[in-house]
Length: 606
Ligand code: M6R
Image: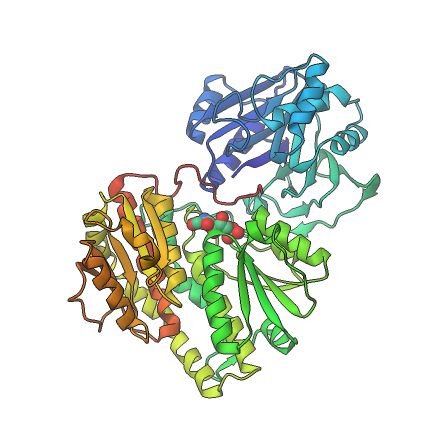
């Protein structure tokens, strides 16, 4: 998704900006650009569609090594197509102001019409160009009062960083509903939409809040104003490691991250579970378990939503608390009364997904209790949560979420166990499940060792264009996640259904060219899933069975086997299997597995 960046300091700004753009390449973008205030007094702007390397080549070609102040941007198209014209930074009609912007200005049409009436027309079709021109029409030499007037005229979400040709010694901007931080290093100050991008570079940062307007002149000279009042925001320590961009023995981040899942499991357990005493020691979970909870509502998007569906199964079965799972994009606009005795669980890898974040703000504004299950420490959702747990999956670079899912479902399983233990779950069942969970790192490692067998099946089916993923009960969300992984990386069409729902219409699609992947763990629904397989075979549809080592393979055209485990833990091996299936098929097809087309790692616009 879009990223904005500003640098003011002792180092060449173009080097710092390119370094940052490279670090955030994984987030997904279609074009990138930068503006740097040169020592000559001009501002050089370079933009390119495509990869950062192309931008770097263009920067090198003009010898842009001077200039200590600049802004940069990676764009993921929302308003207007992918072109250099629409790429940021945008330059105002008079050439003075350069702007990098994340978010969406919702009253752009109205503002554009007003500018046209003043004889100012835009060359491209982005809301940011309109915003840049608007700023130029109202700005004075005082950026604070100019920004106050400017932000009173724009509606929507924004993180903005401006560079002013006539005052190239400062950066200024504003934030509302889109992340933006200031980072402080010995040699200078940074503005960034991604706090993690500053790890290893800055030692301190300030998280800007909605409504903040800022001007930065040096690392010790900056002003933040909110609602007309000057604010002092605490500087926080930035202690994390630099984002790991080393692939090690792997060819792609997706594969590397799939292989990190045994470690993610260890991380989630660390400090929270005492296996010797069969105790969940997390104070956060102990406090949650003591609450009087009438219902749980889980809100999330994409892979995190699928984790929520697995969590619903765990919570309802182990604790007896009824649980709803709602896609973030729908929750905000659905009829939901917020109840003080419910717990609203927000799941997000990035902690910055705008759809989820907006739901959280709405829930909190109406007095709801917000519990975050987040991977990125210090992210917006983590900060806004009343309580929460980190999923400790580490930085996830592949756009296709893999290890984060495992951290999420394990965290939700611990939550369900803690809630159940404080309610009606028999202690023997609780202790038995914890005992089995301890084997998860080894179980996942055994699944990973089957990568070659999965590749063989993936290669065989790579040329098919359509797939069904079927499952029931706990395996239905796994089918949904398997279908999502396959479509986002292979670009093949994949749909997930409850195995028994297929006959209510979609079975019409089945023929010899429409393979089905059926998830069929051992358990009460095993025989019923075998009946579904027969129905598909009767229509000549190929079926790949995802079955345990002890299950009968005779019914299926091909099988993908997973090591046996208790039913509740099946998702932990099935997800690895499905991730590997999507990964191998994508590599066979030659797609960019870490940066699938059209997608962004973190969707920070609604
Ligand atoms: O960062 P989040 O977990 O809030 O992101 C939500 C979705 O955008 C995300 O899970 C997406 O579906 C995955 N990248 C798909 O692999």
